[in-house]
Image (cartoon, rainbow, N blue to C red; front, top):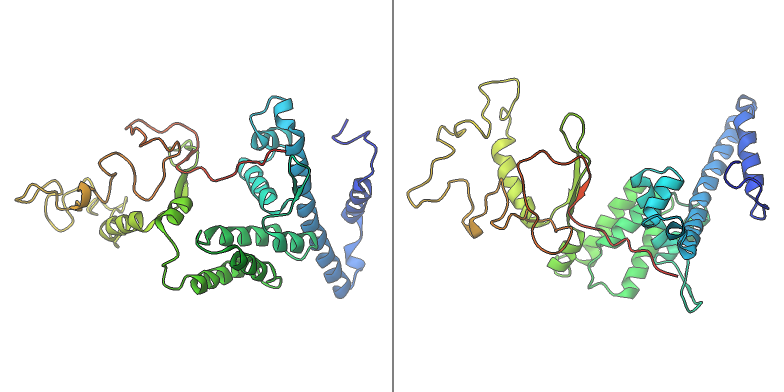
Length: 321
């Protein structure tokens, strides 16, 4: 039996499925260009509305506590194993439902979406899921000092940019942030600590790992120092044995292990004894946050385990019913 088969259909899913099945066999060549464009636009609208309906289903899944009932650790694992979603897709859907879904409090009161204008635009089919995620990212970047009224106005402007592509929404968000905090005085270290983090993908068969993240100004300055030295044209070229690399003598003709007369390493910053190509004295990479929040991780020269490592854990707690 297929999922949902045999269940009394009161939601109209049977009609939706029948319409999609018909679209798979309809003769598109018989349509004029204007008719085909209308079909394409209407189909895209339906796709966007379906994404909005998905938020309701995820909220209901959490309210029923279905993951716990079947022995899953949480909603993310439930979606991955039950619906066979990728880890990224499951996390994206949960984040979207938290921001755009309607929740019911234990008292029975209805809690409206955190981003109401965006939720309305998506439910009308006016913006895509990617557009909604772009709005979510911009809103997450707003400093904590921005008041609630200003946040609501900013979110309305972003959601109302219905004729723009998601990438353009991001550019609008950059200009909006520049308008709200032109001198950078509202953004604090607390805001940067909330946004910073690095995520390493599971290690591949070839030993390589992909990395994504957001670093703070301190780590960016250290990276710029390292890259200015070792990422110059002609440096670290694997096919050129004469190309300078970190294990070779200093690119300027000096021994990279030479220390100056004061005993300092020439490539180290004096502040805190931090090496721009390495960690801080306590073993913590500046500009990132520890995943546990209980101090620095231990480091090892062994090959990394084949798993994903996230330096910060985003706030994705699921509201309890």
